[in-house]
Amino acid sequence: MNPEKIWLSSPHMGGNEQHYIEQAFKENWIAPLGPNVTGFEEDLQGYLGNNSHVSALSSGTAALHLGLIQLGVVAGDEVICQTFTFSASANPIVYLGATPVFVDSEEDTWNICPKALEKAILDRIENGKKPKAIIAVHLYGMPFRVDAIIAIAKKYDIPVLEDSAEALGSTYKKQKCGTFGTISVLSFNGNKIITTSGGGALVTKDEKVKQNTVFLATQARDQAPHYQHSQIGYNYRMSNICAGIGRGQMEVLEAHVAKRREMHHFYKHLFESISDVVLFKEPNSDFYSNHWLSAILLPDYTKREALRLAFEKENIETRPLWKPMHLQPVFKESPYYGNNIAESLFERGLCLPSGSNLTTLDKERITAVVRSFF
Ligand SMILES: *Cc1c(COP(=O)(O)O)cnc(C)c1O
Image (cartoon, rainbow, N blue to C red):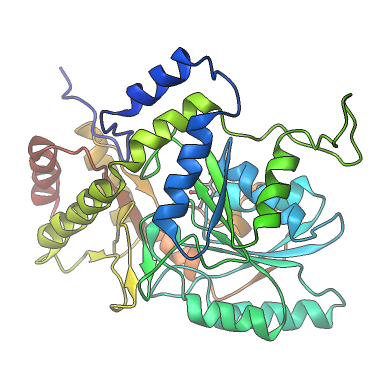
């Protein structure tokens, strides 16, 4: 019989989640509002600091959608987006009838390259359209080059939508990821560092933006005794049950970050003497990653696939690095700026099991595959 599956990143409950859910049942707050929603938002605001105002939503994708709307993106606009990301970063651009303009990564952080970004902005302006927003992503929990990207955004007066879906607990120059954007986004999907089963949040420093986010997320109902609407609304608010899971998860967030970072150190030790493997790591001490996923680069595609299959044979889940958006069939018409760095990462890279709940036995099984492969 096959041994139990080792997952890339699976939900890890702290223990108190059910207490918050029971409370919701006792008080009959079975709705997309209630004390857990407010409590979870306060927990996140306390954690992020920096005058953050948080709106809990049904997903990170919903948060990106409402973020773009509030940055003024409308049909016909162009929005710059890091190409090396998960499709949810880019899809909401298309929901709005706008066009994504994809920008390559740089080699140190694997995130949006400042040089390619500036080139893209200048070229789009020359083409007659200044981009409405820049979506920058802290992929796998690694902060993007915050100072350089924010400086370019300021220079051209374009707002940054910070996709921090994978980076809760990461910091850049000691400031928490999720607090750098004009608007920032978090995700609590089942595979993220903490989960609400499904959920997300929009983070802003402007209390009015928070109020407007909640307004749009609850069907844009005007003040009136009857149902009245002067804007198109959405049903994007987080449920009070899901928020209960989130409250329990906030109690263990720091512990989960520590465990994920421990997994990174486990891989550092494991691959230390294997010259074919480069472990993805922080470029310098300005960057502090939650190491949501640990990832490696191999010399080429063939070796990468062989290692992936060797893990699969032992019922261990790994996954190639995310396929860049400009190579996705659905985005093949979109403009792209860069030097195929993301393409090469996709060809050679592999994400490894990184959960905060991996056991000593799991690590031994991973070690055994690596030792016999190399
Ligand atoms: C997970 C994820 C999202 C989307 O979040 P959901 O809560 O799953 O909708 C967006 N961007 C990135 C980079 C993600 O990893």
